[in-house]
Structure formats: structure tokens, C-alpha cells
Amino acid sequence: MNPYINLNRIEFVVTHACSGRCKHCAVGELSEKGESINAGAAVTAIKRLSERFAIESIMTFGGEPLLFADTVCKIHAAARDCGIPKRQLITNGFFSKDMQKIDDVAKAIVNAGINEVLLSIDAFHQETIPLEPVVQFAEALVKYGVPSLRVHPAWVVDEASDNAYNAETKRLLNVFADKGIKISSGNNISPSGNALKYLAEYFSPPGQVDLSVPCGAAPYTSPLDEVSCLSINSDGTVQTCLGIGNIYRDDILNIIDSYAPYKNPAKRAVLNGGVPELLRYAQAQGVAVDTGDCRSACSVCRKVMAAISKKN
Image (cartoon, rainbow, N blue to C red; front, side, top):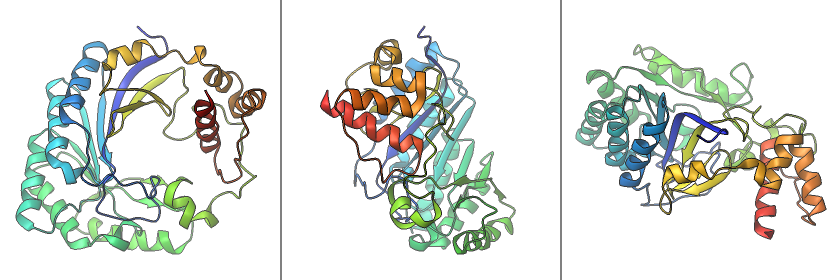
């Protein structure tokens, strides 16, 4: 057993193709039209990981994962068959305007064993995504008995912040609340991708980023030597917060067995002294990185890591 990895969760980025063009999107302009994760490779990874770890939850998201609904269903059916109890899907709910297809997909994902659907509704999604087919999809999920359906908004700064985007999001949430659909706490928008391009005024100014936070302290992250969740991208890349292998080229258990963060001097620097130590290491290696556009310690870390990797 690798002492640095004890998995309880797997996430799959099914595709970067999307039916929306949201100004808060962390991915930004990246779009892989027509491309999705290989369903067979994803299913094999689930089975292999379940042989070794007690996986508690699995999630599919994107992009818009239901543009490839068959792949989503195969992934979750495999997770169900492997005994993974929590099987989540994040979707914006807009993959078709055809009422019959909307109904068919809702039925299929319930039958595939998805037991929690998080529906992305907020001021940003609804700038480019029509609400009517999303409402129809939500109603179809309820009809087919999805165990849990919640609307999952994105907040600017946080839910309590008084701004026009949050006000519009709260108005939209009432549409679903009036139908008896529950609302999740949602998430706060991170300063990356389109969000940094269009919403920069809401984030800490460049040069005022707190770099003292230890590795794994940011939301949705864990220390590089205490990995409990793996994310597998549509191109097969396996990630902690940094890439560690690819399921199209190697067996997932081989990737895990070979993971040794302290043998990598850059990762060792982050683990021992955080981003400041990483910056000192990069400087010692003659790697100069302009981090003036970074708005978080994680974005500084990723940019410096990429520069070091490129040099090596």
C-alpha cells in the first residue's frame, strides 16, 4: 500500500465540452467538442481501485457530462456494481431541448444508479442556458424517483455577499424551491479561468495573495502526501491537484504504486515549506515565474510547478 494514498473518492471529468459559456467557469475557454472520457477505461479504473480501496463516493461532472449520457451511465453502473454507496452527478441540466430525450436521459441515469444529482443553477449558467428544459429535466428526475436532487448554485465571494449576481441567483433558486426541490449550500467561485477574466474585481488583488497556507488547506484539496481523492480527466490524466499519470497509458494501480511525492524535489518543497519554499526551490533552479496574475496560493503553486516541469 502506498502510504501517501488512501482513497475514498473518485471523480471523473467526463468532458470539457459544454452547453453553456459561463463567465464564472474555472476551465475558461478550454473546450473539447465531441470528446469525452473513454467509458471502458473509466470502468476499468473503478473496478481496479475498488479492489484495493473502500471507495465511498464517485462523482461525474464536466463541462456538461450529459452531452455524453451513455458514458455517465456506464461509469455509475460500474460504481454501483462495485458497491460504491454515494454516486453523484453535477450537471447544468441542459443537453437537449427535445422533451422525449430529456425524459429518456433522466430515466436512464436513475436506472444506472446515480443517487444524487446536483443541478447547477445560478446567474451565470442562466445567462446562456434556457431555464425551461432544465426545469423539465428536474421534474423528470423527480418522476423517476432519483433519491436526491438538489440545486447547486455558485456564489460570488460567498452566499452572504451583497452583489447583483448573488441576487439573481437567489431569484432563480426560488423557482426550484417553489417546486419542492432542495437547495445545496453551493460553492464559492474560485479565481481561475473565465472567473478571473470576467470577475477579477471580486477577488484579492494581485500581490495580496496569502502564500502562508499549507498544502491541502484550500477548499477541495488535500496535502500531496495525504491523497484521499483522485480526479480523472477526459484525456485520461490522473490528478491529485497535479497530474500523476494517465489511465490510457498505464494501469491505475501502477500509477498509485509509483506515486512518491517526497522523491520529487518540487513537491517535497511544497510539503516541507508550502508555496514560499517552492518559490525558493524554483529560484535555485533558475526558473523565473511571473505570478503577478495569480489570485490564490494554489494558482501560484500550479504555475510554478508547470514551469519547473517544462524546464526538466
